Image (cartoon, rainbow over all chains, first blue to last red; front, side, top):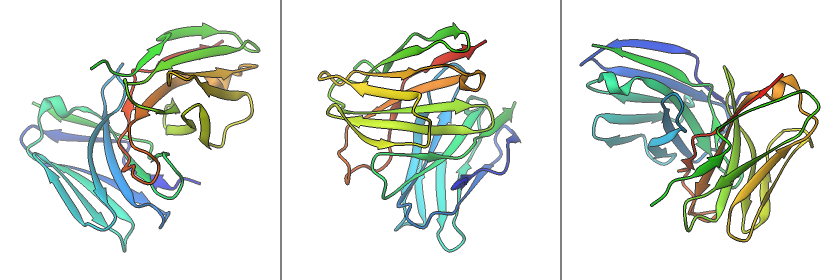
Length: 112
Length: 116
């Protein structure tokens, strides 16, 4: 039972354009949603989060949008840079202590 | 401030053996979690410890166990290894108490286990 799904295994974007990564979830109890970025041979690092009471959170080039009725969130990166090339994991938490439920990840490649 | 440290970084075992992985959290962090990452599966939650007590456990068989020491360092053990246990095992620490936590974890670089 995958509670958090990232349906696109990979995404390729030209440098300077917008990258949009998508994530769907099924559990209505989730109250925080997060995006983590992972480079090869490194652990995931926290990127940005959003509370379930908000619909948008912005941090520099990164914006996360939450659509609770559709149980969908997305991460927008604009402008995309080659250094953004990494695996992006969507994650959620809520009601089960300090536990994150992760999606399978999306590989983002930003071409220069 | 030192990050989360995991040892060993790489190890190879054979089926039936057991393995112990170690994790030192960020100083002051009392919550330590373990995740298993396999290709196409994302990160799967194994367990979380806080002040030497297991607070939460994922859906893994009893062969997977862990513990936390009084200095917050944690170990996880996998007994009777199977080929499917080959994965990257990630340890993460956090500062916030349950109820205040908003999901931010600080991950180590992981221990890559290969089972032959």
